[in-house]
Length: 250
Length: 357
Image (cartoon, rainbow over all chains, first blue to last red; front, top):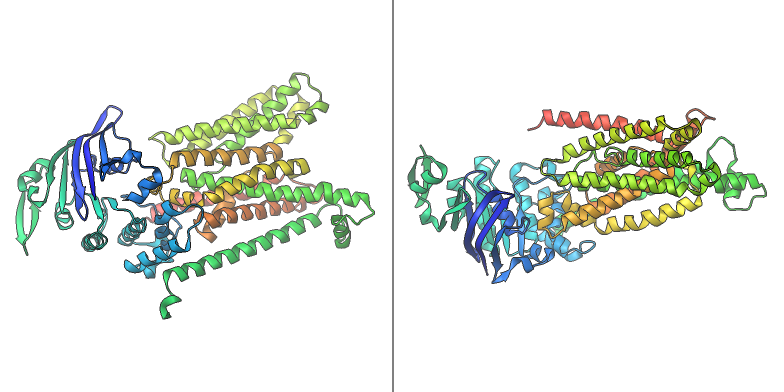
């Protein structure tokens, strides 16, 4: 299982957002896209999901070009967890059930209902099943959104800033939750974030964007004080705690 | 097996059962108000006279005509038009992501009115007599339809613009509303008295205008679209969670929105062109249904349809009984209720913003 992105560029009219982006992700990996706000992280995710049409470039999954996939096939391959989840008068069960949409023709089948139940149990969301999504807290809402993505049974999950707008404790909880489900379900994850320390906690691979271009791509070792200075324009110190690297901004 | 009872799926099934039970009771309510509607009116028939006329076993032809040519078609029209206007409002709200979207707030109704006025006034000034006027009612409907489609196309293309949020769409609709009202006033200014009164009379929503032929046409248009909407209910469920999400779930969002809004507008314009302005059903009924049934469209769409029917039949009964023997235009009644709700929603919406966490 391998996804390759080759020389991807995107522009809104004359406004260049992404410039010649290339990287690859493999089974079980969690790729974190890091960069300042407005650098094109969301745009990149949307290009991967074919929601936006890139100006040029090739995206393949197991050497098959993604634009040969139909809408439904693509939905079975890749799930998307948007940054702001619109909450409506749909309850949690219905929201998670929505993940079965690519498999539903007219009405959900028994199988769809049972799978939804399994996911809800697996993620311990039972107590919320009949609550409307607009009554949930930010962290619960993110979990429900991830549950829906898992219910899609896709091989890849794209997440746009899943930890933004959460309390610190909830950020850590959700990070561990993400690590847990990705290693249990062997799902490839591509996650955009701007918090370096959380990124280091979750990610196995890192793609750092600066001014529409790739600044660096690789494993943990690429994240350095120099990189933080260049990309975010802040000085930092490093602290080792239990063999984990943390950055403290000056 | 112990925890089977409280498993999420069984809880959900329980919830769905409750919802279908409420839907069933709503259907009973509709049957009840429909019967009341057939049995009430200025001309008093006893219960048995009505029943005999209804089953065609009466000797009194005037009773037969009263029931079969007046009250029954009127009631059936109220049922279908109420359902049609309501589902079209419901779908527009989902597609444009705005609970205030409806045929009347988007300006579709006023555009249809303008079209109808234009055809009535133009045809009369081109020296066509009133007698062939009658055979040209469908031309009036056609004009009404064409102009409502124009508004739909404008709304759809505006909604594609990046600067247009779901809020500004309704503002654009209000602008469209005034625009077509202005056009209507202008052409009415140049009409002579007879056509002017015909044109103005046309704008009063009136259910008694239709007869069996119109009923059949309404059925032919609304039933297939209703089935289409129901078939797509999971697409709408995805769409109401956001366009990006719907796309990622495999929904062809642009095509779905375009076709859906077009069909919704088709229902509206046909209803308006046959019956005149009947405003706010498309706002009122889906709103009530969402509160009761939630936003799962496979139950919301039928629920909105039945709620719409109940409201329109009730409004029709009210219009005939408030100041007996005068029959008020039913459009005025629905606007009265609907506009009040519209204001209420705006006030409630702004309060929610103030208290936002």
